[in-house]
Amino acid sequence: MHAVTLEEAKRDLERLRTQVLDDAEPTIVVLETGQQVVVVPLDEYTAWQETRYLLSNTSNAAHLRQSITEAQAGDIVEQELQVSVAPADLLAARSTLTGEYLAAFVGSRPKAVSLR
Image (cartoon, rainbow, N blue to C red; front, side, top):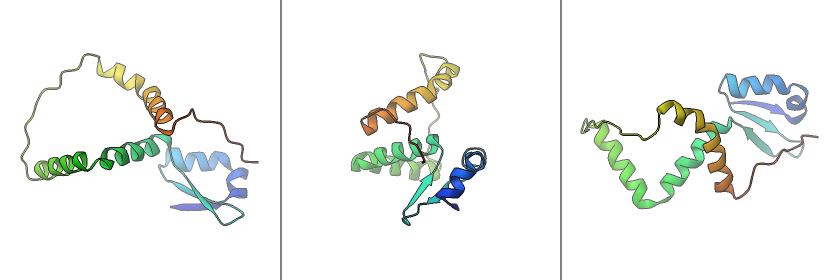
């Protein structure tokens, strides 16, 4: 993981964006106080939050772990997925649904933050 100072991040935001989004490399931004923040793509952050949520329920986590163990042992059953909407429609709506889910999860709409 790459680290930059806040001043470097402000000076070259486009490079930081490319590094985080295009290269899929999270970046640590070190503040003047020594505190650190991590910049990651929203999709990755949302996936972490969803995983944390799914594993927060002990019975659900146990079921998921058992399913993984069974799949790794080759104990799987193939089933045809029946969907009521076209997969392309699901993909088109994904970013909107993810953003709405995340906003509901944290209890408010995301706000713009100034780096001044």
